[in-house]
Every structure is written in structure tokens, then in C-alpha cells.
Image 1 (cartoon, chains in turn brown, yellow):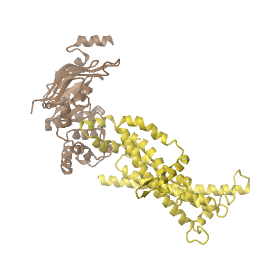
Image 2 (cartoon, helix red, strand yellow):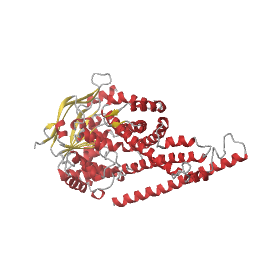
Image 3 (cartoon, helix red, strand yellow):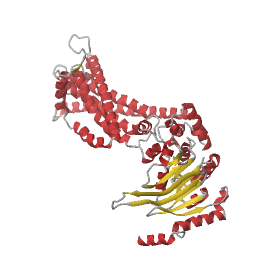
Image 4 (cartoon, each protein chain N blue to C red):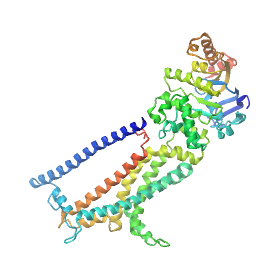
Length: 269
Length: 295
């Protein structure tokens, strides 16, 4: 297995190319994610972070450039189920029990009933929802639903997890608990994770590297490494944590590399 | 835990059902009282309509008519005749409903799958319902009579069923189309990320997601199938069903004014039975869904 989980080279995504309402959502993006690495994509609305995630997931094609996942083109990686994905909405199916929601990707892959069931229970055990296996999704709280969605994204045991603001709709307390849970799951499974978020503390707390993006055109302006060792609740109050938060905040304000360009663009608008 | 919850959901439904049955009986009683009051009023003052026993027989006369022989000297009571006619009509309506629902579903699936077909077919689907049934019925009988497929001969009963299906398919196809288009963008992206095949997408996502839209559409379709059957029976003159019976009994109002009302009761009960069957189907289809409807 290669050391590179995701490799993005020269990705452009232009909507309505050649038309008056042309929008450059992604401009010449290069990004490499190492195996086992936790990467956050952060930036204001419209900076293309979700679009970049969708290009990696092959849910939308790039206008130019290439994305590889686990050493293969993104389209092949999707067909081979080399990644799991979770969105801001848990998107659980109401008509299925919690367990059968987790089984869904396995069902589509043609796993046998027994194997499916065993695997789903294993995963529900991991997200501490085994007692709720036969409940309906709508009987669960928002945080619990999101845990089911994470369990589902891990079902086929993919090496990579793509997460698009999965905790965006949760309250602050639940959100912090979910962050700890995600880090624990990552430790247990050794997955590579690409995590889209709006929240600076969330990005810093979770990530090995925070990729800072800026809009119009969507591009990477800075990549900040976070070295806080293994996270505990104390990490959130440590000095290193605040320093990293400040560094990301400054990068978002455009005081990092390429800042003069960023400022002049804001001036134009 | 899940089991006990399911049980309590069932008992809650039964309780709700008992309450609404109570209201229904109260409503029927109120109608009877109003009917008799109007008759009473008509015997005292002049009303703009006829309240005599010929036009508005007493409720007890109607009930007494249940057990009277259909024709003088016959063993068959009016009630038996009405029940067997209603059962006959119900079978035709049921057949029309099943055919209509099947065609409606297939149309919806095809229209959902191919957007150009939605644009091309939907106007025709809508136009089909603007043709008046009265004009259509003789046409279908006329064409049907000249239609045969080997040993299979088109009967006038088949014409009635066809008309019932013709009315039933429309609400179903429109409702089902909306339902098949109901899944959220996120659900669709999720299925896409699983590299789901079109068939998996249809059966694992679109079809189950359409149920909350399908059920009300089926209720409308069932009502349309019953009305279509009764009206088609009358306009095609097919014997054996409740529609024809109402017409026949209506001619006997001078000799037996209560008779036609028994047939009308039969038609009402027919409608209620059809609605009840759809409700059972509804309870089965939505057993796993939240009780508040999203639509």
C-alpha cells in the first residue's frame, strides 16, 4: 500500500465555463494527504472546500486536473468503495432500522445477511449505539444520528473517510463529544480523514494539518501543521491550541502567503 | 424494547381508530335526526322541496326495506340483491384500481428515469383526464366490442374495469412521480458514492422514499376507481353492479320509494369498504415511518 492516501494535482472546477455567470470554484488545487493523516479544509462559504471534497469523492468531475485516491483515479476509487462519506445531514433512511442503515452499503455490495449483520453490530458497538440497533433513525437525537452515519461510512472498511461538515448542525456540547469520538475511532481504525468545517477550533482540535482556503476563485492560501500530540479535553485549553487557532485565523484573514493578492481582491469587491 | 414500542404504537392506533369510529357513528345518527326533522318540518310548513314519503321515506321504512323481497314473490331480499351487486362492483373497482395503480406506477418510474419523457408524456397524462367520462364510456365499449385476442373476448365488464383503471391511474402516476423525486440531494449523493446501480437506486431509495406520497395518491385513486365503476356501469348499461341497480330501483320509487335508498346505502358502503382496504394497505406500507407525514 502506498503512503499517499489522496493526491490532487492541478484541479480546476469552473461552473458555467464561457458563460457570463462563470464561477471558478477551484483554481489550480494541489494537495497530498498521507495515509493515516487527518486533514481539515477550512474557509468561508464559497471557497470551494465542499466542491474539493466532492471532486475527491467523484461526486462531481473536475474541469481540469486529476485526483487519485489510494493510488487510483477518483472514479475507480468510488466504484471500488475506497472511501466512506458523511454529510452535514445524516441522511439516514427512515424506513430502515438503525442497524439496516449501517448495512446499506454492504447490501449494495452484495454481502450475505449474516456477515452484514455482524459487521453492522460491530460498528454500532464502536459508536456506542448497539442498544439502538433496532430503533428507527427518527427516534434518535441529532448527535446519535450522526454517529450512525459515521458507522455507515465505515461499513466497507475504506482506508479514507470524507466528511462534509458532519457536526455542523449539532450544538456545541454534542459537537465536542463527537469530535472526541471521531478521534477515538480514528485511533482504533487508522483511517485517513478529510474533514470540511467552518469552525477554526474544530479544525485545529482534530487535524494534523489545516488547509486554509479562500473564495473567488476558490484556492488554497495556506496549510498549517498542528502538532499538539494526542488530544484530551485539556488540549482545548492548552497554549499550543490557542496559538494554532490564532495561526489559522490569521491565515483566513489573509495575513499568510499571498496576502497582498487576497487583500486587493477584497478591495475590488 | 423495539417490540414493546411497536405494540404501543399499534394500541395507540387502535385507540385513535375507536375514537374516530365513535365520531363516525355520531355523524350518521345526526344525519338520520336531521332527515326526520326536515320531514317533520315539511308536514307543518311549505318547503321548496317534496318531503312526502315517496320522495323522502322515513329512515325506519328504509331499514324495513332491507328485508323485503326484491321482486314480489322472490326469495331474494333487497338487501341481498344490493350486497351482491355492491360486491360485484367492488371486484370490478378493485381490478380497475390494481390495473390503474400498476400503469400509474410504471408511468411514474419511466417519467422519473427519463426527464424528456416527463416533459413529453405529462401533458398527455393530464389531458387524458379532461376527456369527459360520459363521452368516453360508449367509445370504449364500441372499440372493445370489436376487440378480441385469440380466446380472450372483450366483455362489457372489461370496459367498466378499463374506465375505472383510466380514472385511477392519473392521481397515482402524478403522486408517485412526486414521490420518486422526493429523495434529498444528500441521499442521492450517498447512493452515488456507493456506486449504486439504477435498479438499486430505485428499489432501495426512490421507491421507499415515495411511500408518503404514494399512500394519499392511492386513496384518491381508490375513490376514483369506485366512482368510475359506478358511473361506467350506468353509462354502459352493464348489469350486475350497484350502478345499474340504482338506476333500476330509481324507476320504482312510486311503488317502493325506500328501495333506491337501500341501493344508495350499498354504494356508500362500497366506497367505505374500498377506503378501508386502502387504509389497511396504508398501515402496512407506513408501518416503519414516522407518524407525522412529511408531505
